[in-house]
Image (cartoon, rainbow, N blue to C red; front, side, top):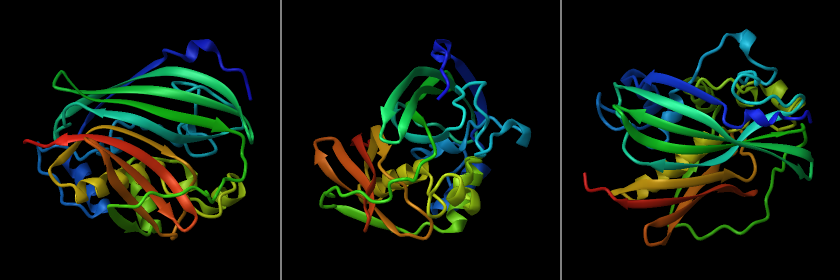
Length: 278
């Protein structure tokens, strides 16, 4: 793995986007949710479908991601994945209005893992609208050498208080890639996915799984609103293999969430919440 210059830490990027209601309609259709009204609050985690900086094909790497080297550091010969993160919900982002994302690389750390050297990049985001801080977020990005992924996990799953079954179809994966402008080929290019990155089939997006876990929490607990969320991927979920998004209240103002199937848990999260008095 190539040496990462220390001056990547603190590097910044910003993006202004209009949270167009017609684009929110596309997210809603993908998730089979009601379309939001102009000026209404954007649903939790739907902001991931906005604030994308488009680049031409010449600006992408072999994996379909925006080529690193401008904002994110380079790590030659390694695959890149979004491993988890944390979100604080301060105020709702409103559809139909401009908002700004300000991003900064908070840390770059190299570690040794079972498959070799790993590079962890933590990116800090702040989302503002009308001069007000609406969301604070940290994303954990990991670079690793190509290796066969771990497809099962022998770890006990909690007893669920709510559960929704998801069967990830090619249409769902395509639509999520489209609304988030995500070019990573593991979500739509099966030969690349199986022959280069070593997965058995197309991979369900980690952010989509986090969105579905939070959506299931809100479906089961009307009247509550998220305050903080932490989430991480444990292993991949793949095309056409059903999984459940589940959870339970774990303490006052807290719940644990997870995604699981017959191969064990795949993603997990903790959410802090409060009563929605609006």
